[in-house]
Amino acid sequence: MSELLPVVLRVLLVVVAFLVVPLLVGQVEHKAMAHMQSRVGPMYAGMFHGWAQLVADGVKFVQKEDVVPTAADRTVFKLAPAVALLPYLVALLVVPLGPGLVGEDLDLGLFFVLAVMGVGVIGTLMGGWSSANKFSLLGGIRVAAQLMAYELPFVLAAASVAMAAGTLSLTGIVHAWEPWWLLWQGLAMVVFFVAGLAELQRPPFDMPVADAEIVFGPYTEYGGLRFALFILAEYAGIVVLSALTAVLFLGGWHGPFEDTVGWLWTLAKTFAVAFVVIWVRVAYPRMREDQLQRLAWQGLVPLALLQLAVTAVGVVVLA
Amino acid sequence: MNFPGSGLAKGLAVTLRTMGRRSVTAHYPDSMPELPPRSRGVIALIEENCTSCMLCARECPAWCIYIDSHKETIPATTEGGKDRTRNVLDRFAIDFSICMYCSICVEACPFDALHWSPEFEYSELDIRELTHEKDRLREWMWTVPAPTALDGNAEPAKELGAAQKAAELSARDAAAAEQSADTSGEGPA
Image (cartoon, rainbow over all chains, first blue to last red; front, side):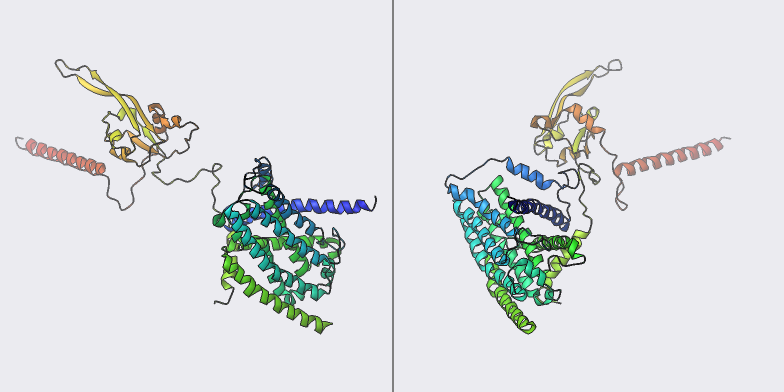
């Protein structure tokens, strides 16, 4: 029983982080995006510059009617948000916050995270298929094509840094990281970040779920709490992507006084990457489906392979 | 310089710079907007100036002005004089749910009974409350601002020109009368 307690405690802490940090990122998105567009964003919720806007949104979504379209596949329709959301929670369990501060230190941490993030895709596909709506189906198929295309450079870039560190364990990779890796693995970082954005269907890669293009694609028929869970899944995905980029390519907890405040460095780097995700959303127009595919197959995959070659040469030279 | 990615970098730079600047959003209703002069908010009525000539009701493209009036006779003031008749308003209403704020009624009125006021916060929950009767239209008169000054290079108003001419003429007549009085005075003396 006593060996169960620390495990339960760790899982509980990760769940709390999973519920709170995406809301922080969401609020930063509201305010940062607003100021980048010369406006002010939410100001009234919570009386002070709208800090409670997402809390108010959550309450609003919870009190909405539960609607399932008549022609929809009920079971699949109801399960889709959970399948989209839970993989990010599981992935967060393996991401290290500081030396020794991790939900569960897996030896195959990186492999586990990549596999689990692939499952999250199926949630969106389930939503698109079960909605019995042509736009949803089209959106779902586009999502499938996009995510299949970007999974490859995503995995290749992650493989590059695993090769450089000589281990798949995320804590092992952070331990092995050195500042000059910013140059050596720099290409992999860019490829990983761009491919990750496309995996999350964030602008400029949000063609399958854009409301002006395809009426929200797979999410068209969703409303109320189910829709809120899909949106939470998107922001949780941003948190997981930012945390992974920080841990794999930016050195995780490395920084001044890392033994005591290492966790602060990880959080700071994660939020910096999350800010770049928001920044990229505001600055760039949406890519067309064919432009998206061309970028993946003719741009990112060759770059990722080039990086793998560079990493291999470096590993052999340094061995 | 057009190296690949320079456009992307410029986009990021512009958004970051805009984020740094204070946004000019005016926080209505905590702060009132700064309205330009002659803003059209609501139409006000001076009941005393209105003669029920019906020009405004006829010219209104939306037919949103409702006028009812009756004639009253004022008995003659002098012996054997003519009785005067006067139009008295019973009802003067403007339906602001139809009004298109085109200003034709204000321009058409020959007696300056209708005026613009910049008040705009009169929304109602019931559409019938948007028809303002003549008591409410009089209340709006207290919010009508003074007429704005003309531009520096504009033609002066006709009333000013006419008044000035009248003043000059009367001054000239007075001067001429004085002169002829002087000369005629000197004659016989």
